[in-house]
Image (cartoon, rainbow, N blue to C red; front, side, top):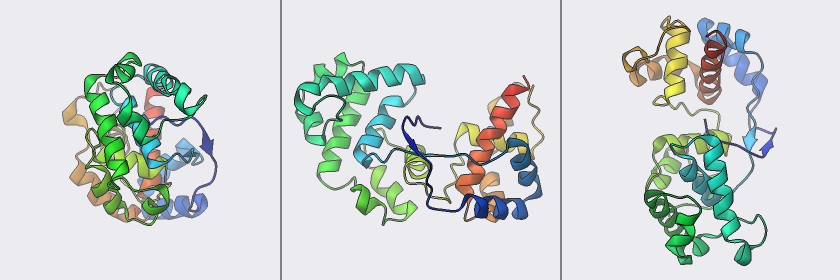
Length: 233
């Protein structure tokens, strides 16, 4: 799951309705929900798509603390132009020297990805927050995966944690696949997980049809299944 620093408790759907639907739809999932407890997902702060995706790019394949440090350094490097703690605009990112981004700790590939994100924000490929809220999940994925370094998984996390959409099922996510195997395939918490023990996305998606229109909530509980398993090891 992605990093979320500032949060808001408001979701655009009913937590109680989601839990009631999932509990009625799937007895095994209902047992997980009962063990894991209340659904406490909070939306990440309402960044612009550009800001949220820039953060996602920086966090890819890095430990949270290291990524947070690099993210903070990058923003701080623009302080003379933007002010204290203010995120740079797409134009700022395009105009700045490459060494400024590299000095913050960004890799060559992430520097290229951030510049591509900035260019595609300016040309409209990356929609504004107001426009993106009117798009379907599929349309958002189509738009945002045109950006270098942004894949389907990153966009799914954006839709779940930034937009608060209720029916996204990230079936390729490692934690969701492991949680599914723990919940439905009898994977033991003490078993060392190898790729062959993870649930397959096609099998997961078939079962998940009954969870619609609250598959985001189901995914959140599958992540919790991993947390519960870790506490037993």
